[in-house]
Length: 406
Ligand code: FNR
Image (cartoon, rainbow, N blue to C red; front, side, top):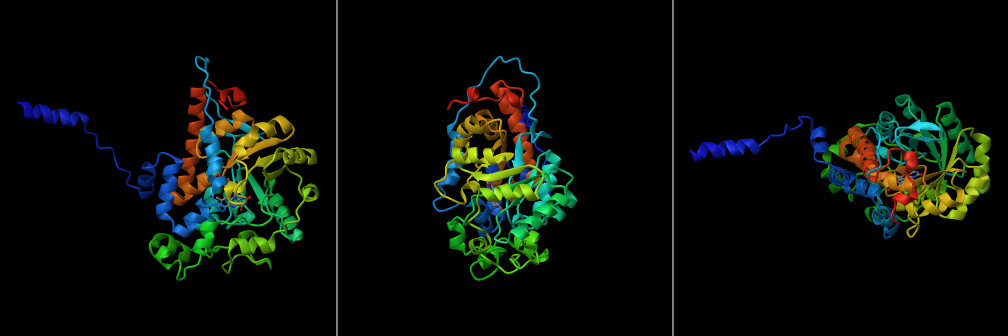
């Protein structure tokens, strides 16, 4: 008598969850956070490639500090706030965005996935967010526009050859890019010691030091060999070198980029670009004030994700003082360490108008391709809505410093 009853009891608690048949869905079903996707990407990518994405300068103290600044700051939630439906939408340069996030420029995206920048641009459009294409992208300005009708921004570095910069800017304008982002924290390249140790080059080479790494990741290696060569697509065929022969990023940047860049160059950009100008890499309040005086449309508080000056301040710690100094005169974008939608909420509560994220989407791309990027961008939207509901706030415009404990 007892036996059938216990079988019935077991039956009542056993549920076989249907296992996705698609391998990418199966992989994604095991991930609940960006940290999970980072672990998956670590397994799927050769270590040299993963370290190029994940790593940062010297002791990686700034990399850690960027995320720690968010972790250290607690919320002060409001209860019984009579919430309406939570709306995470925002506007950036007066244009609606699904939520206040811009996808950061990341060079050489095709090493994480053969579709590279095309995959990220498509995912950004589906999510209703602007995507910033890097000068050092492995898909060109025009190729990316061809797959996306969404908001695209273009990031430039100060090449020694300013004619080349002007030409790329004209191409971006012709392809209806919306904003120009000048990155100003790269006078020389930061010392990324994981890349130094591995002798990492762009494009990655398969040689004695990387053979084992490549052999342990045959899927990645096959795709690298099967697809057209990875190049700096925006300068393909130019005499600055397009990455068709392997270079270390430091040799490339230190020979091609102009460390004498100054505020007058920002003014020069106005003469060659009609749309919004964004300066990315502001790391102190007085530079944010100078940027506002020069009339830039947005400052990106950023230390390049900790990849340049180790010891630079965490961008989140700069948001409040910069908002006090220039809030309302220029948009303030907080870049670095965003791993959850709650980080975006914190940045906005502190006074930013938007956030920017790089590695979060690259981990998604490395773990599961385009669908991995979709997943991250969907999580961010869901996280924001849930966090705001738990904070007692139903509109992005109502996020304010009283919601933060520090
Ligand atoms: C970058 N970043 C970057 N920035 C830029 O202005 N031009 C570029 O080409 C690149 N390339 C690049 C490659 C990779 C692999 C990473 C991880 C980052 C910096 C990027 O735009 C952004 O500032 C950081 O990624 C922000 O930090 P999180 O979000 O990665 O923590």
